[in-house]
Length: 471
Ligand SMILES: [Fe+2]
Image (cartoon, rainbow, N blue to C red; front, side):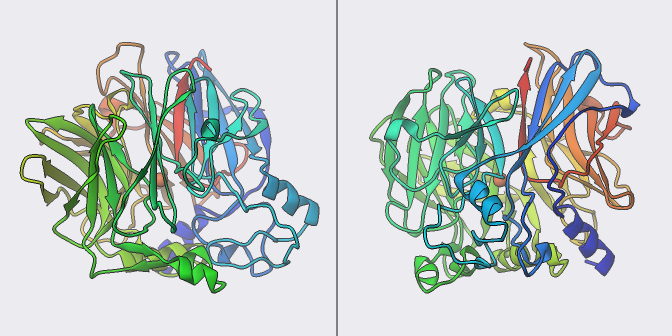
């Protein structure tokens, strides 16, 4: 990537640690009146800068500043609040960077430090609770309206590991929330099912061949799929005083594996070997068909390059390791084999679908994608809509200086068909140093958005978010 592109890509995560409450008034176009609900977004936004500066932070680091963009009858407002974890409050009290992070050790060593928890990765609602999520801690509950902090939620004390991830999967047919945890000590992986009433109906350890950073997973109607990438999570590096970043090691000698098991309690996991060494953060969706499981994902062919970029993106160095491509994985449950197919040469990340179809056959997918022709643009230049039935993909045009976040699909109304609705994405305009929420007609991604809502305060693009109807 050019120096200019590196600087702009680094700028998408530059902190602006301001809590907000305001009506959004700077609006281009018109907000569709069918949009009635809240888009929650989460991302890192470090409040107390380390002595080495915010540019020394790891890509994953930063206090969680959750934003709620509320839509009601053609109007919109924005509220932003920090997740007030014990470590956040302690760091504010100390007034110095004292919790450490992916790249950095603490500037001040506390005698009695609380666990350093920044639930900055996703924000998900289930069973009437709203959770801010990160993969090294239990879910952190927030009030869905005020965004005031409630505290950690611990799965009815049934947790089998230290944490669960930021990527639960809610099966809209059963109402269950499936979620997994990972850690560098045994059991390396854990699986939970939470019922519609919030009770925990399944909590089981999963035997995995090695500890890895298993950021996300997938479900189908009857199965759970665990992607075990060619990245080794080495606890020894942390025991020797290293950071999380030091502990993640690319292992080209290990091919990626996928653990597949049935959803019923007590089911055995079976490991499928991928044809290549690779890593993925995010599957798009998975479903069953004709004795097979199909799963699409954004796959990093060079995990070492990715790990290097995670550590250096904030410093605008080596940002070009964020190169994942859309892949399709086909698991033959009878023969135990895995086939992989690269679907596009254009990089893609943050794959999303119509969430009502999670685990079931979908046709349309949406992702943040790169520039065509080369890898130079990384993944955050535009939104692309994919047709899993083989039709052409459609892109929001690239605009110089503009970067996009994860696209979130919102159905037009209850019972609307797949793809009949809106795609919301967070935009960062590096030229004007400002942020917006764009509303696209999902069936016209290539056209100008229906509305662009400029926010009063710049918000780092962040990671993930979700729509909650009528909140
Ligand atoms: Fe993620």
